[in-house]
Amino acid sequence: MNFDNWGSSKPPPQQSSPDDSDDGFQSKSKKTSQTSAAHEASDNNDIILNCIFQEDGRLVGTDAIFTSPNVIPHHSSDVDSNPHKRMGIPTPSIYTDDRGEIHNIKANDKRINILYTKKGYLRSGDLHPNEQCDFIFSGKVNIWTLQSDGRTKVTYYGAHDFIKIPRGVPHVFEFVEDTVLAEWWEPPGFQAWFYKPYRDIVNKTMGVGNISGEANYGSGSGRKQGLEILVNAGDMRWNTVKVVLGAAFVGCLGFAVGRRSR
Image 1 (cartoon, rainbow, N blue to C red):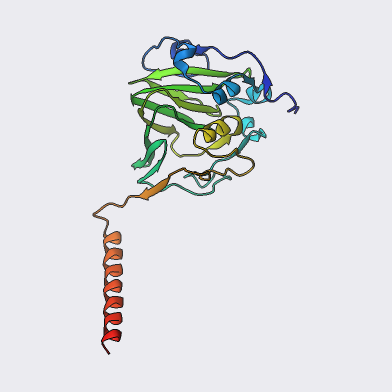
Image 2 (image 1 turned 90 degrees about the horizontal axis):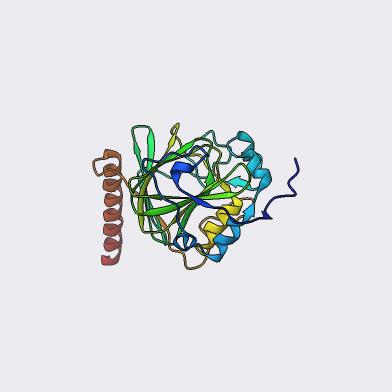
């Protein structure tokens, strides 16, 4: 396969509304096209949106897209069969950084993420071997998707829109307003690979360097992040651990006081 034509410069893509999409997207309501001013893209965004990735475009929506040199391991997955698994994100948990919060929860066997993201930030820059579903509770978002001709299509969605991103389609979420949305995958299970041309732009908005080979997710200066693992207050195992740790602490404290009083 010839990869020489990756990233050739072409005219910018047209923004579209969900109802005139031909890439398998579905939305609950129709939206009108946005102007370039409303898009509010940065210079970095404009660069990627003016590029055409012809070889990758031919592979979009197929298993072959995962063999592209632009597709690299994601930092996390909760499915053991993913050969690129590096670490799982526990549920329930809350991940926070400068962009906002991701609430990772699980209902029965279905993983659902609830995301709050501030205006001006990007998320994703990845693709999945299963279908991604999203519902926007509030806010506005532009979704970039790689098309079969190698162009990047930008589609606008708003509050109460339902979105389906087909398997094997690289995508980016660009948040035009502070936004709250839910995301999940069908069939259930989170597996993901980064699409390097997109993920590098996402990283730049967070002050993180480009990715090559293994993702350097989590590096960068001035970036605040953290993962809070939540445990049910009624979980007897956790209560037992707290009792044991408390007893150990009291025992050690008593020993230290006894030694000092001698």
